[in-house]
Image (tube, rainbow, N blue to C red):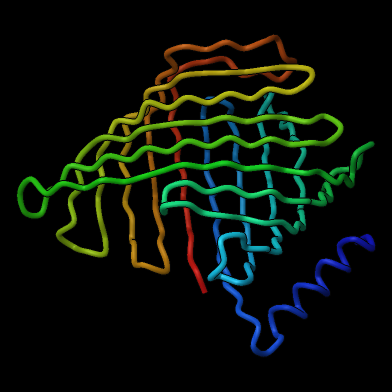
Length: 253
C-alpha cells in the first residue's frame, strides 16, 4: 500500500470520527453473471460524504472492481481487477440529476506494467421512476436512466449507458416487490485503441426488497442483441442471445 493510500485512509478515519462533523455513509454493491461473455463481475463501493446540506458535497470513497472472463476451453482471463481509493466532489439536482468528479488511485491485483495508477474520473447520471396503480396490488412502472463516465489516465476510457424499463409491479407483500418488465438497453465504450457499442432488448424479472435507507434486488434477464458496432478485439465476445443475473445491495448508514 503506497503513501497515497495511507494518507486517504488516515483522512477518512479522522473525518468519520471527528465530533460535530456531519457525515453521510453509503454502500453500493453489484454482482452478477453474463453468459454472453462467460463472465463473472463484482463491483463494491463505500462512500463517506460531508456537509450534506450544501449543493457540492466532498467525499472519500473506497471500492473494489473484479471481472473474470472465459476465453477458451478451461481458460479464463482475469481482466484488470483492482481495489481503489478516491476523493472528490458530488452534486445532485431535482433528485434526478447527479454527478461527481473524483481523483482515484487504483491498485491492481495482477502483476503488470500498470499495477498502480492514478486517474481523474467524471460521472454524470440522470434517472427517474414512475408508478401508476391499475388494480390492487398491480401497478404499471417505468424507469429511465442514463450515465456517462469519463476517465483521464494512460489508456483513458469513456463509457455511456442508457435504458428504459416498462412493465408491471406486484407489491402485495410490501416492502417486497416483484417486477416484470421489458428493458431496451444501449451501451458504448470508447478508448484510444478500440470502441464497442450495442443495443439490446432484455425481458426481465426482478425481486426487490426496498425501504428508504436500504434495498436488495435480484434481477434475471434474457438478452437479445439487436444492433452492434464492435471493432476487432482479441478478447471480443460473440453477440448472441444470452442470460444475465445480477444481485444489487445498496444502503445508507
